Amino acid sequence: QVQLVESGGGLVQAGGSLRLSCAASARSFSTYTMGWFRQAPGKERECVAAIQWSGGRTYYADSVKGRLTISRDNAKNTVYLQMNSLKPEDTPIYYCAARGYSGSYFSHESRDYDYWGQGTQVTVSS
Image (cartoon, rainbow, N blue to C red; front, side, top):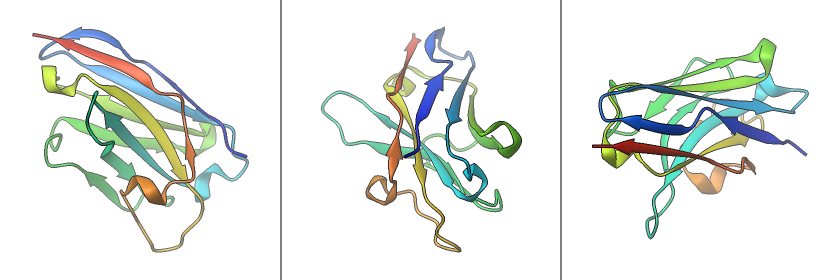
């Protein structure tokens, strides 16, 4: 069982920055594909960024390209989401998710992820 704990959410003004962190309890963290998802009330959960287990491939939703950056530190079992130039529409709860080793398969679909954190709230004021 993998436990994921997010931190770093909070209130920020539009145009500001936040860095989310997700600490994983997995012994083989370096083999997990990691993703950041968000879900606004009444909407489906969407992937905003994902990084392959090797770090060689990343995915970004069109709405966040150029503003959000996902990275991982396998020595610390942690994945990060640097969020810059935040907009009010970036507001919902952000979830960290992990997918067990899957070789070259790289997905940003929520159904493909095995473990989820409890979420951290990001609020961007206009």
